[in-house]
Amino acid sequence: MAVLAVDSSAGTQALNISSVELPAKAEEKLSPSQVRNMKENVLMANEAWGTAGNAVRATAASLYSIKCDVKHGNWTALIESGALSVTRDTAIDLVSAHQSWLRDTDVPDAFLANVSTRTLKKIGNADHKDRAKCIDEIKRREGRGFSEKMAMKIIKPGSVSRIKKSPLPENEKINVLNQRIEQLMQKNKELLSENNRLRALVGESAVK
Image (cartoon, rainbow, N blue to C red):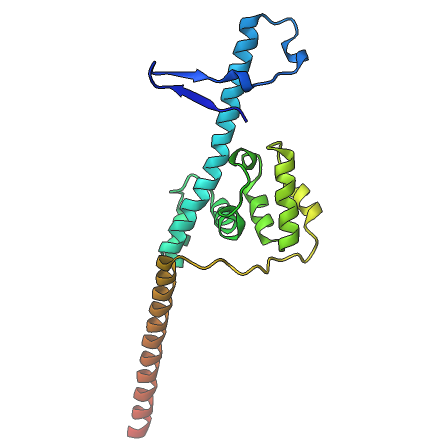
């Protein structure tokens, strides 16, 4: 994909349009200035599309970071509150995709722009072989889109990811352990409360 070069000395953006190849039919009967204008806009359109793909990956990473840092109740409240620019289901799909494969893939950002979050999640839920086939197809299509229907033609019924999750970073491990400790402490309080209630009932029965 062509790139956008910046001429810092002049303080202006210089478009490297030499890398843009247009079909002869597209240039037919156009003036040199029209051809140049078309190439410049093709380049800028491609750059913008690549940015869209980067936004998908960055959004998924940010949401995953939030989910790892808070309790389940906080996370649920957030994605259902409307505070995010994405819907609840989209947030869930992006986090799932990021955790299962998106954070480790070498698929170019621009190729992700035309793949729905639901499809990204389905790819992550597939077994290793089917997932690899989906990723190869996304690369082969070079950003021309990869629909859920295309994914389901590759992913066999019953195909489920059995890949061991990559080790959590230390801060995430601590967060998970702290959450588990809090859950156990709360459960202990509930059991003590129930035990005290039962003892009180036994005491009342003895008095009678």
